[in-house]
Length: 439
Ligand code: ATP
Ligand code: MG
Ligand code: MG
Ligand code: MG
Image (cartoon, rainbow, N blue to C red; front, top):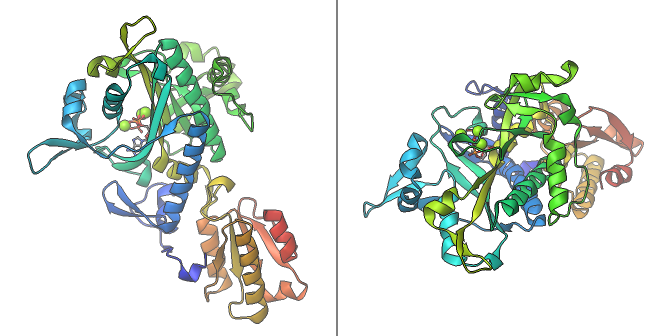
C-alpha cells in the first residue's frame, strides 16, 4: 500500500475522551472512529487488524473440526421467551419492535438461536459430536461503555456451541476449546491465562475466563506466577484425543489462577509466597459447560442407541475479537505508539523514503516495494512528501514490526536501514539483504 493513496487519518493530539493507551492509540493511528457511545466504525487499518484476528480464530477453530457459519444479528424475542431469558437479561438487551409490532432484539449472544437450529435439524446421536460457531457483531447496552473497543456496546465476538450426547463428551469439547483458545491467543502474540471463573446461577466448576494481564484491566486477578511460564508453542495437538486435550487443560489450570469472583484466600495461601501475584486483567474469552440448561428449555433432544430421547449436553465458548484489538495494544505499546506483534500487524513492514522525488531513493523504494509485495509481505510505503521526523513519528505511532529506511546517504554505499519497532535497533544492509531478512 502506498501511503499517499491510503486512508489513514492519524491525529497529532491526544483525544481527551480516551482514558487508556489502547483507546488513545486506536484513535490517533486512525484505526477507529466513534459513531456513537460504545459504537465504532473500523477504518481501513483497524479493519485490517480485525480481519487478521478473525482469520486466526477461524483457522484455529477449524483445526479442531468446529464448523463456521453465520447467524443473524437480529433475533426474534419468541425464542428468548421459551428459554426464559427474555425477562432475565434485563437492560443490557437492546429490544426492537418491527412494523408488525413483533418483538425483536439485537442478539447479545446466541444460545437460543443455535439450539433452535439444532433441534430442527438433528435427531440422532449419530450426528454428534457437533460444534458450530460464528463470528458476528453483538449488542449489549452496557451501562458504562468505555475504553474504546474494550467495552463497546456493539462488538465482534466469536461464539461457539458444542452439542454432545454425554457430559463426558461435552467436557472433551470444553477441553478442546480451551486448547484452541490457548493456541489462538499465542498466535496473536498474547498471553491469556485461563482462570477459574464464576459459573453464575448455573454453577459448576466448568467455566474459565481467559485474561490478559494489564494494569488497565477491569478484573482483579490472583495467580501463581508459574502459570505465566506455560506455552503451547508449536505443539501439534490431536483434537480427537480426549487424553491429550485433558492433559493440556490440566497443565494450564493446575497452577492457581482465579478472578476475584472465585478467589479463595485459603487456597491461595498454599502457593509459595514468592510466586503469589495479584494484578489486573482483561477478559478476552470465556468457555462454559452448562449441561442441558438450554436443551431442556428448548427441548433439543437426540435419540440414543437404545432408542430413547435425551437432551443434549452443551457448552458455549466466546472470544472477544474486537476487544482483543484493544488488549493487544494495551500489552504492546510504548510512549511513541503501537508495537504490533508480528502475526497481527496491519502491515508487517513499512518503507520510508527520506527523499521523495529523488531518482535513486524513489527507484530503490519502488524495487523494495515490488519485491516485498511479490514475497507476499504486504508493505506500507510512506511515499508522502514529508519531513523525515514526521514520517518516523507516524511509523512509530502505527507500529509496523519492521521499518526499512531509504535515504540518499546510505544509498551511496548501496545500503538501506532495517529497524525493529520493538527493540529500536537498526542495521545497515543492502536492499536485497533486507528483503531476505524479512521473508
Ligand atoms: P465482561 O465481563 O467484560 O462484561 P462478559 O463476561 O459479559 O464480559 P461473555 O458473555 O463471556 O462476556 O462474552 C465473551 C467475550 O466477549 C468476553 O470474554 C469479552 O472478551 C467479549 N465481550 C463481552 N462484552 C464485551 C463488550 N461490551 N465489548 C467488547 N467485548 C466484549
Ligand atoms: Mg458483560
Ligand atoms: Mg465477564
Ligand atoms: Mg465472560
